[in-house]
Length: 378
Image (tube, rainbow, N blue to C red; front, side, top):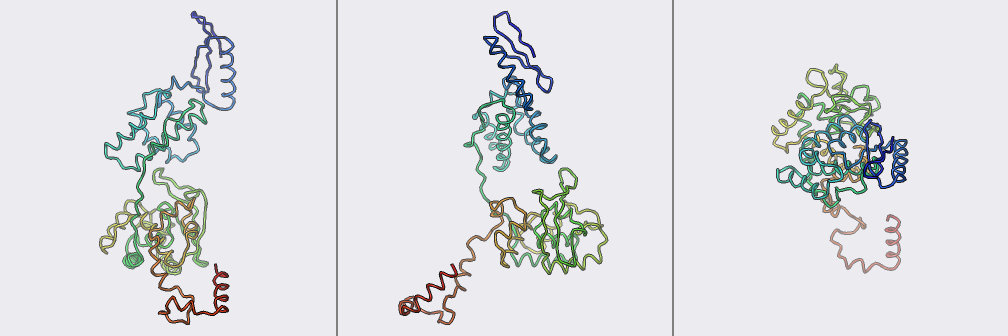
């Protein structure tokens, strides 16, 4: 660190940040230059970057951000973020200085993507990436004081109901695939609602065939081509195995020598591409909706709800982080009202044709007893 008096009479403060890059700034007085140096020392001790946003391009900042702010993120997630940035952001904004990026420029990036016909979900990913990058530039690196990625620019993604199977279609698929390649994977996914990576990582050590319990302990991350010692959400969980699946697995255990519960045809780890292709072919053979592996997970919610599960039950089964995520798996909202209306009975001994006026003929004692009973069940 040094302070130099320039020929113009101003004082230049030079500071070297943690990455060995020199940052210089001119001030009218020596006192201002010294104050700048003192603040720089404080920020270095706190682990913050010193790079001036006026000298840093968005591409340069992205490299720092990816290696520091996102160091705790998974490798697969960081690869996805880098691919998204390089493809959609860097060509339009990468050469610009950080402080020159404005809301209209961010809007131009999103509009360009829309003009190219890219989906709202893809545009939302870019928006969230930029929002996070500039948010960290303010909170973590102290490079900026204003986030140009305005909330008003956030793309609105239409809510679409995921393709799934109803009970009859699920039953047909299960029956069709009992002896088929990848049949075990389909049975496991439909009955337990596991994510694809969790199915791939499931071993016989995770299944207690005596007690009928399955332990979800690991997952396979396709992008990283590696196993993680925890499922998505970093929380291991266990569930009761439905009786029909338990019987299926007990038979499968006697004829499968693989380490994996749902292996590929030759005992190797289940291949996503081959499994997904076969699943879709089975659906076409049965003339039912063609679903992918995640469609089976959505079909599980139909199976459990039809047999009395609640929303909280589904959240526990799917290991969701919040109920708002579970809501996406509820496909028949309100459609059971007619069925419920047909079975509601407060007067089981009365005729189903009892007119509403008949209630007015109940004496005071009966009315009081009815009110007490209804309130006690409320």
